[in-house]
Length: 87
Image (cartoon, rainbow, N blue to C red; front, side, top):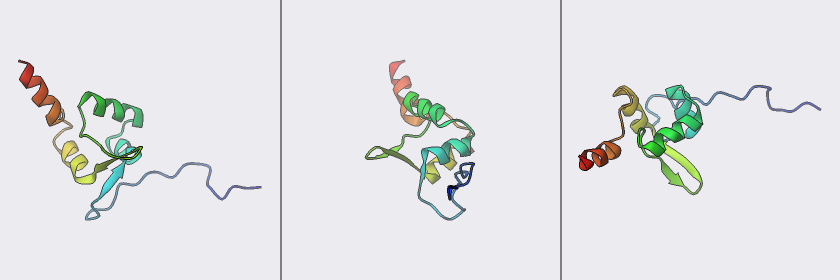
């Protein structure tokens, strides 16, 4: 019996321009071309924008990710502020 699902998993598409909202871990990872696991490491280190937690789910505002990428993926401001306070 054949599955109705195709052999390869569908690519997580980035929402179209003007369709603002929250994006998933897989969508962000695909957008920045890294693995979901690596993206989680970046978030844990404070090198990526913080996620919004919805129960067990992580979501990011699409605009925050686009701004972060447009700026060259700098360290997240919270981490930079913490490190500046240590000096």
